[in-house]
Image (cartoon, rainbow, N blue to C red; front, side):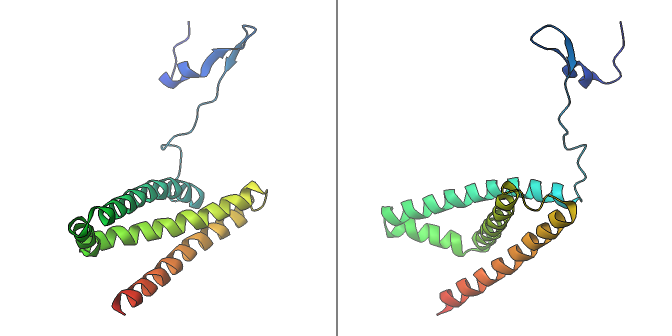
Amino acid sequence: MSIMQDSREATMLGRRSDGTPVRRPLSPHLQVYDMMQMTSALSIAGRITGVVWGGGALFLVWWLMAAAAGPGAFGAVQWFASSFVGLVFLFGVSAAAWFHTLNGIRHLAWDAGHGYDIPTTYRTGRWVLVGTAVATVITWIIAIAAWAA
């Protein structure tokens, strides 16, 4: 009887349908990933921006329901949206929207079989980050100009 060095090894042992033993691979987890690596960071950021998008969708539903409910409810949502916390939230949602969109376009290119080599992966990752920053700033310049007019 062997003593396992790692308790996770028990989950690696299994049997094929014919009964022969097989060792299953372990999926890597957060301990394995280098968070400063471009591919890992953008993958995690893609998931986070998806969650932020969900928060933005909930805000949109709140805003639409308040518009349908009447001036009092709509005024409350508008007050929140124009508060410091609301503006930071809306800025975050707009940045998440641009990141998620641009990163999605990058993934579409991967789905078509383009850009898998490491230099291209890093280059397109930088494009996504720069594009997110530029598009978010342009969006807010337009929004502030429209709000001030």
